[in-house]
Image (tube, rainbow, N blue to C red; front, side, top):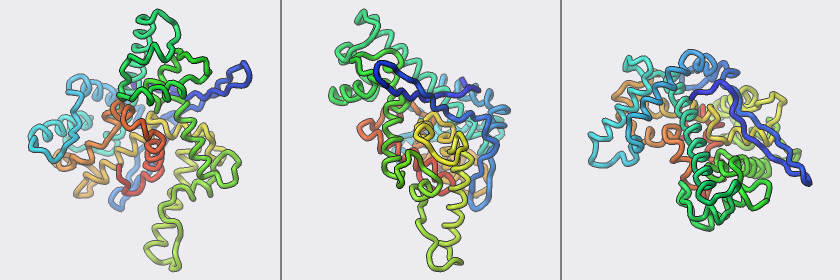
Length: 354
């Protein structure tokens, strides 16, 4: 279901016997009026707030029809196989679902709407599966809270080793009572949704890039962490100088308009937590953008069926279409993966790879 309310990442701070809860809300999609992207040297605009109002419901229904009528392995993972007809059929199915007005002209706003709906729907499915697994384990063990022994025989979706399961259990047990309640079990089931992992990632990111150790990133520290071109160079008229100024300007706009949620001029730990969360709608927007960068062969700002059909490798890496598989992959390097996700997000106006 496409939500018009804010999802929230919850941060828990334990002081003595009292547990305080601080919320770090994901930004409400309706507050974002315009996202500017550069496609093939020309600007394209996606008004995601208006997109949600006009296309949110149709995109949700399109994704639900798509998810209900396809095999879960719909994304072509091996594009260079001999099964070219099967792959072509899979890509055609994806194209038809994303083309919301059925005119064989896939536009950027349609792709954004569809991927945002896909992430919202899969997020709810993942949380529902976590809650169902928790209740099943409760009933099996006849307990209200789960110990590690009660969980150990259960197969985690990420197929973790016993050591990996133990480590994840400890990080999910936020009140340190050696038991998981339902909320903590969600962290265990889908750690990239859970605040223990996201909070730790944000702390590590700050430790690396917070030069003055004041607990947040100001614009200078943010630019230092994210600029691909570190300097203008000696010649202010060179291509490097132009690219540097362009990137610097875009990065500042992005900081102020998209990433600084509470508009206080700095990125705080809670905001970094929200940005690393795969449910943040900007990740879906970013993937739609990269899809067009890679697949719009004639540069007309729309995708025809043939263009997407020739773009198997990029389409196969659009994780918004297979979120649960993405959540349960590479958990051994989860903080590296979160860092890559944040890097892709802040570099979304460049021709950055998925």
